[in-house]
Amino acid sequence: MVRRAIRLYVSAGRDLEAERDVIGRVVAELPVTAGWEIGRTPGWRTTVAVSAVDVSPTTCDLFIFLLGQDISAPAGSEWDAARASRRPMLALLKDVARTPAGLEFQRLGQDLWVRFGALEELERQVREWLVRQLLDRAEQLRLTLPEVERLAALRAEAERSAEAAAAATDRSRAAAGGGVILPSPPGRG
Image 1: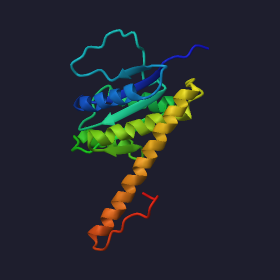
Image 2 (image 1 turned 180 degrees about the vertical axis):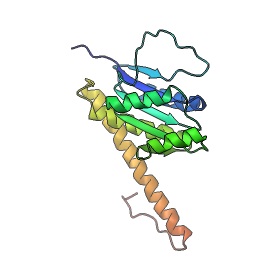
Image 3 (image 1 turned 135 degrees about the vertical axis):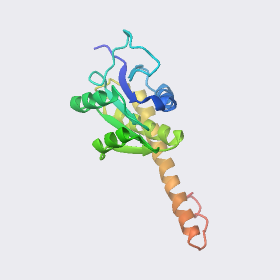
């Protein structure tokens, strides 16, 4: 069977163009040679036209939903279609003030949201989620052994970084309450 591109759909409001760019950059950096087909909510300045890439919330392999200040059509119907199709979804909630419509939509998915503030945080969250999804679906997506190995190495690197960040946070909390910080024993560093 011929290997096809991985299909990703990104649903985001008008105020999230920079975040869409981050997602595109993360996807481009992933060590997958099958290629990607990315569908997205039409931008507010674009007109809907016939596209060579037909990726929708119901035809995608993976779905990313971003909520910023407001929710507007067709994001709500994209959310409903992705939920109904049971596609793996990453629901990202930007730490910003929301309009009344945005607040109501936030309540709809209250148990699903992953919060982010800075673009660097978004980048890390998207990369970690995509790597996990690709590894979980490696056979279905027909990933090669070298691709799986490179993705597994990315996941291990992310886990090490998270552990180091947690350890640094623990050390800074200890210092904030007063105390002595001792160096790590040799080889535990």
